[in-house]
Image (tube, rainbow, N blue to C red; front, side):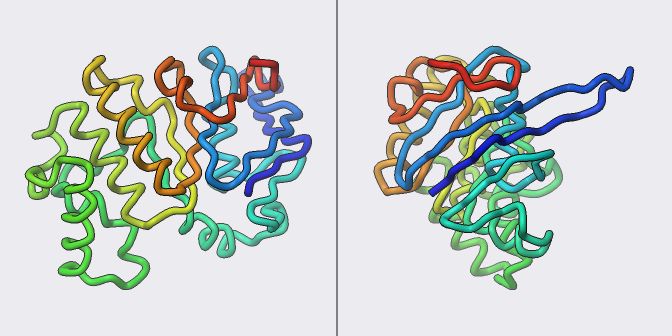
Length: 221
């Protein structure tokens, strides 16, 4: 499903030095796999996820998703590609003034889905994740674990073929992290391709593929 060849993402630092966030990474992740990116902080995991999710463009190299070369896609075409990808960000990225159901379904607004239908979509996916009772709450009325479940619900509301998650358990206590790990196990069982960055050993134990990064380069796990 996803293949990269010689993938690079370079930035210019504050002193104009070149920062090689992702440096010559080649990997293949087949459909339906549970892939984990691991490595120390600053190793390039977040940058690689953003490239795999078509959130940013590489400096060089190629990304092929389901046989389609993303480098040749226009911005509009990349936006269409992202409709098949769910994203779970490390800091939850919930909108503080919106109730939970609107946070879950605001990515569906551009598709022309009206509010009553979006509310039902939110209710169903929140029920699946065990937080349907919080559907009218604002994010600041939720625990960290509940906020992360809402973030996962938002990713699932679009019925993605691929789910990307950046350190999804890093801001959670042990119990909430274990519960979220169980949720990812259930999501994977439905056939969704999962690609997560994590240091969590329980998530590593679930992985079918492990890729280790260090200073932007792929190393042996």
